[in-house]
Amino acid sequence: MALVSTGFAGSAAATYQVTGPIVAVTDTVITVLKGKDQWQVARSADTKVTGDLKVGAKVTVTYTMAAATIEVKPDKAAKGAKAAAPAASPAASPKS
Image (cartoon, rainbow, N blue to C red; front, side, top):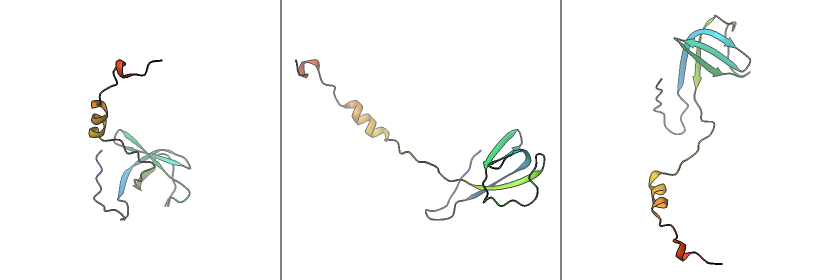
């Protein structure tokens, strides 16, 4: 599955849809069967629902994607510079 967003910083998040029968539903998650794949989408008390959510009902779920956390990794050039630094030789080490 490839999802592409062409939005700009500060713009509203892009929306996506998945359609299929409900295979499971709880207060916090709805699981929809799309082809052979089961899509689990989180939901809350604020999720707008029209109709009766029950297993087997065909639904269209509209959702957005939002980052929960972002971790920046060091770039390869910075890693390479550290690895290229010469190790201290035993002769240069302090002796006790």
